[in-house]
Image (cartoon, rainbow, N blue to C red):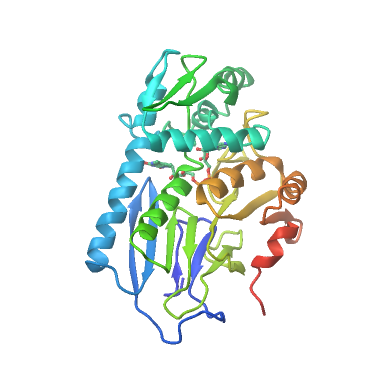
Length: 347
Ligand code: FAD
């Protein structure tokens, strides 16, 4: 990593401060305030260009307050989080929830249905069975019976969110439905930090939470933010491509970094809800660009589950910029949707 890169926890994306011409760019360089730290079992980094009242310490304090609030709402790793309390609620009666949790559940259900259930926020029992949630890694490959039993505890149609005039509630059709927001919670957090910075009148920033990014304006050199897609492989930080997403969210789902091996087989952390098993196809990463990081972070996992052919058809139907990498015998094949071409940097 050089000093211009913000490493994203061995994930796919790094923010690069490379030069790129832009008509509206300011002519002189401005200082960049940079804060980073641990959050949600992973890492965050925020850059703000120019002044911030109270400087880096105040920026860090405000960002971490937002992240802590979201962690206490959306975590399945904290037994006392709002989501964990709902998961522990072994009944089908409605539970009052915060607007934050309601917003994420509603978007999770919407994107889940849009992807035909490929992204499924109720897949938690399978995630835990395969050892990718708060539970320990299995020492044996789960049996077909265990998988079938866990699948009975999943289903987007079994989760209902209602927004009333004075409160939001959520209920489940079966008492042991278990919601896992790990795939989109970081995107929501990036959106919330971006909204905070917008509210403070900040015009140029980069927010990154565990590989889910929100970008606005320019870096300190006055250039558009440039984002590197990592080249899959054993070596961290190798750049596959550099993108200029503009004032957007961007995130990548990948199957090659978070995995374990058992009985000679490799299991990645993305589960196909239709089979109840980790993915086995050769699509190794999908990068998505859209205005909201909550949306890109939810969608990238669904597109991974679909596989490259279906994901590209889906993206072209929805005019969605996506970039895919598929493993081949001699490397990786790049394929992207029609809408993606606009985000390739100009030579
Ligand atoms: P993504 O590709 O973005 O998501 C993969 C994850 O989504 C899987 O790990 C699984 O949980 C889930 N998933 C798998 N398949 C599907 C599917 N088909 N549909 C929907 N979801 C699926 N991790 C810790 O180790 N410790 C913590 O304390 C911790 N706290 C967290 C708190 C919050 C609020 C959140 C949102 C996450 C937390 N995590 C924690 C999880 C961690 O930050 C990452 O979310 C996780 O490691 C996977 O992130 P990713 O970006 O690599 O993968």
